[in-house]
Image (cartoon, rainbow, N blue to C red; front, side, top):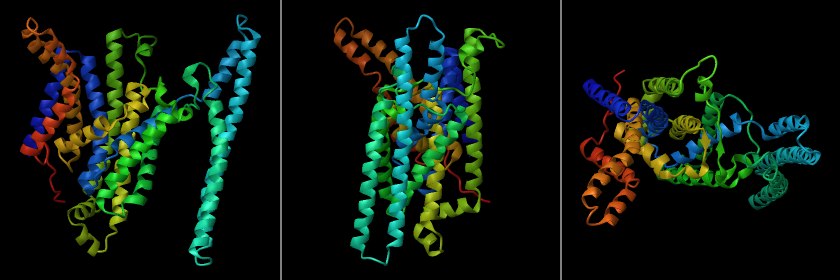
Length: 460
């Protein structure tokens, strides 16, 4: 069994080293960083699927929620940026008084809109709490129809007040700012590492909400619920420009490591190549530290009494239920734990590309690809999830350039006879990624149905 581990890790090392020598070390380190981030998300999915048999079809949504935290936590608050800009303009003699006066008005309007926004959320929260208390207090005191009508009336009233204040505030926020890059709320300006953790907490909170609804039903309802929630999340992020700029994207996300330009200045004074490599190595170290911590948690959970109970529930839910185990509660726990890791991975991914792009989240890359990583690596094996993340991401990235090279060689033989055929082949290179992933998944299911590193039942 351990010989297979050596073979797989040696193959991965060989692929990375070959990429470094043939293409570039910067590109190879980028593959490693993205592979480790994918390994974090695959590990979270592996806990859900490999430990409890939960089919999470909404990995995309949880990753997007984690990435949203990078905007809400680590980006600067736009109004504060506008105030700083006003202070700089006020001492610049080249700026006319009319521009300063307009900026002052925008700051006042925006500050009032922010206060109105907080009032809207308070009204919404108070209405929800009031409806819950009314439902509790009126139970067994009035008929169910009267209770339902009163609760519905409270919810409709609070929703109307909430929408009125929210819509007014949103219009002002989306219309004010310094340039087009700041027509949204912004964030708290905290370190990005805090955003990673907060992204996991947001994803875990969403998982708790889904679990309260769907985990008490049949298992296939969980897949439907997660798929639906993920699409709802993406739709909200695309359309709520005041929160995350919508499809305009948020660029310039902070990084936990010094940037390339900082490494080229005092006190580092590195050249261009060395600064780029140092930046990527430092980022890999931070991600690997998080991944090692998550691996430790997953390992402790797997070999604990809780892990043995989860495997018993996965293998025979009826027998575990007959033994008095709370199936729904345990499923909820493992679903929340896995979603937390997926959310952290989504935040890491947004930080790596230094951009939050809601329109870029689609099921092919953020759900199907993570599932291929878990299945190919070995369902139920934590090391298999990490290996699957590294290997599948490597193949996903390299499939297009490899196909482009192959099509260029094949098309050259037909260039004299049919130039259109050669051009058609080159246009099909990006589509080879999906073909390679599908073919790889079929080969794994046929020749290694338990994955490259199959899960082994713990003996202790």
